[in-house]
Image: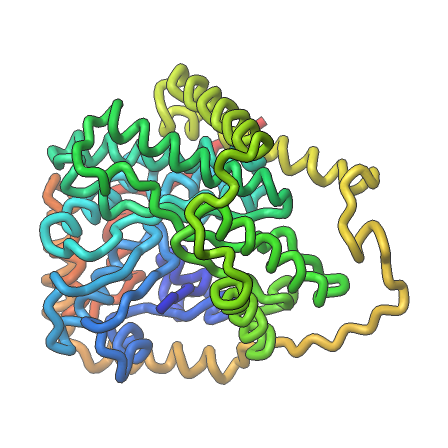
Length: 448
């Protein structure tokens, strides 16, 4: 199962927060407390499913809600399977849904890796994500370089905490974009596996072959979809998905044709699913391993994109590492420059986009059903939150928040405190506000 969260949740805000107005439920589900998580998975035995959650800055808290919901079902946390995205460095680089300064955010990341290693051996505690970097305008080489450098930074932080690389590395996973340049994307995926395996073996001394694996999920490129002639997006998505399969992805998400307009309609989502099913079951491309290995062009392109990525590694290392590079705005400027050049090429007609700057249908009449989040839905969510706050034990809530603050001021792992807070029905926003008091909030420096 896969769960995407709305913008307030991604920013650590409850649905009744003033800054949440107009965004509740718009791009995903609102989860403010254990109550919402219980409702979301009502009737679903969490010990028997695998759940992937697209959440980053407040990932540890959302994970705590999930664990608490499973425990209320009687589940053994050691048997829970799934993934939290939990990739904060790419938020500073590309998606901008950060809350705390980088150093404090890294503490939370390592807390989740450590807790998962010790308590939840089947859980993927981080999905190192290039998707959002690419969607922000990065080139394939930039996506590859910044994603893997983020991942290696997490590895180094976990080792510095005292964890053995072979104890946690097999549960790390990656998440890449599959864009329009068919062969370049295949080469990117192949280069990712090479670079990750080499670093894990030779730089970090991993002995377990599972630590060497660059396990990755692929999503087709949302930024390649067009509002004009949206049926064309079915074709774009199919070829992007095919590149992911030929590049060796273990998991795949195909975007729906109407996602430039709203959350997908049921029909569009079904067509996206059918695209995957045809790839998997009709045309045979999933049968061979690395079917393009040995192709002179693909091998050359893989070498070329690997060289570009490793050049970025060298430049970042010269700056003092990924956190220092982010503080200087280096990856942000590189991505912004690539996005600007891409748009210039479109505007000049040097890059063709069917239906946008070529083969335009002037008489196009769109009949796209739009999924709307009504005010009544938002009122119901806010009302449920108000009811929860009236019914819960306020004394216990205050006790748990005090304990969380004291722990945050020290050095202990915060995951047990998040789980305790979750069981007491402390809300996401309440926990985040306590952490803000201790960690502060991050204000991105201007990048010129």
